[in-house]
Amino acid sequence: MFENLLVTGGCGFIGANFIRYLLDDSDFSGRIINIDKLTYAGNPENLSGIETNYPGRYLFAKIDICNKDEVANIFEKYQIDSVCHFAAESHVDRSIVRPDTFIQTNIVGTFNLLEVARNHMDNIRLFHHISTDEVFGSLGKEGYFTEDTPYNPNSPYASSKAASDHLVRAYHKTYDMPITISNCSNNYGPYQFPEKMIPLMILNAFEGKPLPVYGDGLNVRDWLYVSDHCTAIWMIMKKGVRGETYNIGGSNELENIKLVKMICDILDEHKRLSDNHPRKELITFVTDRPGHDRRYAIDFGKLKSTLGWSPEESFESGIRKTIQWYRDNSDWIDRVKSGEYQSWIKEHYG
Ligand code: NAD
Ligand code: DAU
Image (tube, rainbow, N blue to C red; front, side, top):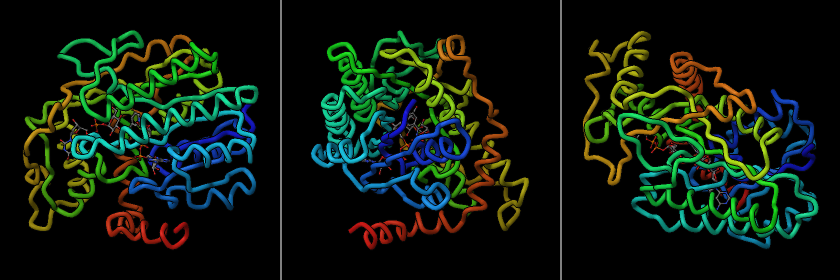
């Protein structure tokens, strides 16, 4: 169905997990062309071994999606027939401090990709856009986001993703481009950059450093193990109705403070801090994030009833696997934390 699949942002957290899933575990039989700008969040090491394990089926080019000519070259050179668009600036805190790159990559970059895809419309079977539940804003104590929830984004990140969703939808309505969009809740799992809450807490807790919880710690997120996100995306790409959007969630609502305490308890089972203090003592309440959304919760009933998808991983098993992955991958952590991965990128890609 898809022979030459363009994946954007494939060296980031979810993109790398998705490429690994497609090649290792799915029925995808084509080739993947991964374009990534390799920002601080893009690490080719997240895909180590892939080129050798799948000769000819995985190609990489360091490209900024804001560079339309380079994107167009890729479409022509590899006869791209499908797109799975992950590339984005993804961290809410960064968007508060420096929104500029979020506007450029998330809005202008998505627009460029759509324009190039429009120029190759005869060949394009699908443009799948990866989005977030943050476009819906914040919930109170009750209720869930559905595909019909009005957009109400609160951060520059969420607004830029909302704008890109609207553009993708408009290319379907206006130009009849075959598109699908997925809006997913918070992901966690291997290869997540340690600025995001779960890996940040795990790594700080390993080292006995303070665990900074924003505000009162009662904000709620709906956590999804990254491999479940990957299976949902692939299912939507294969079977989703063109022009439609699908919500993806984990049915795992948790207050931040409970989650941090859970991480502490799991790490303490292995070994407490050197003075035998429990890690919960590291929790430090810090100034809240401006515009901090209170609660996210996803109703993924449409995806379940129409395509038969449900998440497989429970939070308990997913968080244990994740902690174990970070425990087993201290070299990856060291290179990310020291910035060595960035020196490697400079050396190889300039
Ligand atoms: P990430 O920050 O880990 O990775 C983003 C990737 O995009 C990096 O490899 C980066 O180098 C690349 N990139 C950034 N700007 C680029 C540009 N201009 N051109 C080409 N490549 C560029 O992000 P992630 O957490 O893997 O998120 C991937 C996608 O999923 C994003 O679109 C994000 O909005 C969405 N999403 C993330 C989550 C989550 O919990 N992480 C949940 C729902 C949706
Ligand atoms: O909901 C999907 C979104 O999830 C994605 O679209 C984003 O790309 C992804 O970054 C994530 O956004 P969040 O802002 O929810 O994730 P983050 O890991 O930054 O924060 C999770 C919660 O933890 C949030 O309520 C803020 C809080 N937090 C975060 C950090 C980094 C803390 O309390 N302390 C922290 O140090």
